[in-house]
Length: 410
Ligand code: HGY
Ligand code: MN
Ligand code: MN
Image (cartoon, rainbow, N blue to C red):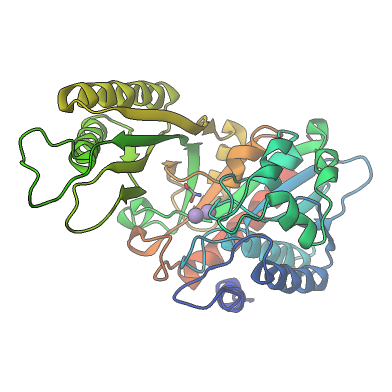
């Protein structure tokens, strides 16, 4: 009996070593680390009998052909990581489906449709101020304007793709035909504490949350920290702190709402000068788009009130949003059956993190399989999924593919 969990652990250990120096895993898109990761995955995919290609959006595609004229079931996740991230986020969702195809081959199961295992280049968006170019290319929703966006060294996404040996102008041709896209299954570490609290190895996602991000700039007036009277100061950081507290209170008091100020930059940022300007990002998430949108409007009202009360100008602009994406009810049901077949209870839960599946939803029905995350810690070197849980996930994915075969095509 093959120990799929131990095999998963070994593969992910190999892959986690493909990283920039430092704690945890740092693997950014279109870098030497990205190239090394896809070389490793390509060899492994070929060993399993997959046809391997790298598309012009940087997505590695491992294809197992099906009978002529049948559709394709897509699966996979992202190869990239956050800075000093964990060994499971994203890449586990590429490794486990490959093992599931190994298992089906070992069991002599032939699927009546094609399967493509996808390793997307960039889901985290930590190098360029955009993300999801791989799934958006396949879904036909790619916006070519992002090719001009620059990383912090001034390299455009277009140049990064070309230096990686790709032809960005071909990206629009990558769109898949919806009529032959059976669905997209993404396996991902939960990145939260729910499955551990419920003592469950696996969970099935109901909805992937929506997100919006706002850029806030507070304009104060600097001055000497010792000589400037407290009365009448225009301290930009005091105003920003008022904003942060008010936004945190709003989210703490609203069901299904999360709000985070993750970035904050102070100018001139010296110990003995009153802060002149503060730039911060406010991110709002919810599985319910109306909750998210009203929180976004509330943020703008809070900004106006603080600006008026403290008497200093504050700019706020929404810079990004994506809607909540419900998973396909039929695929949820099938995946719950597969999780139960693999020994779990099949809990269903929302995803507070976004995923490649969020973008694939524009192409085809989506489903997500969550794997228990130790202490709910992710985006951190200590992120961990156990071999036993990953073994159960391989069983569930293989069962899901086999069970999906039992039904007619797309
Ligand atoms: O931000 C997210 O939810 C994802 O980890 N990129
Ligand atoms: Mn992540
Ligand atoms: Mn991820």
